[in-house]
Length: 161
Image (cartoon, rainbow, N blue to C red; front, side, top):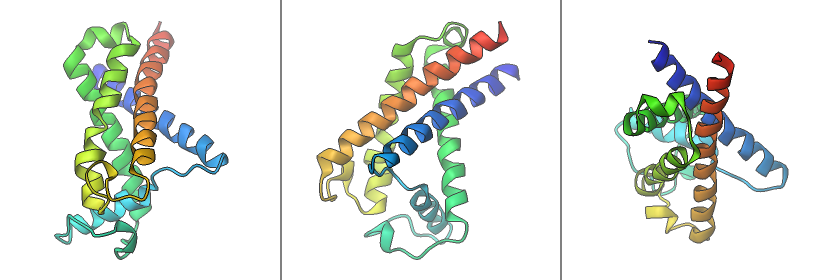
């Protein structure tokens, strides 16, 4: 049970690392994903709508920001579990950067092949005005998540000692 809680805390820490990075980027006028749109997408799923021509033009869903933030953190926790499933409990005891970055980069598959097409952005943002910029931003933020996995696990391992 303690291991499950530890993995969840690491996932929350990694996701929070992404949010800190996004906040810093906003200070410089660089926008990232607004999790309201993730919540809007999920909210519309309950109404049987999984694809949007443009998620921005779809009707607002009640509590979409809360839904989106909850999903964002839940996904972050789920990918932390994937890391431990692939690399084992030994990674938790002795975290290293490379496996965490691998998972961070693997997480790019979800937005590229699921979320962005469903939002009406095309595969890997191909329908966006500057798809290469969007891809680069995704690469960076998912690398930050991977680093956050490592940093959170490292901090957690030092705290318990």
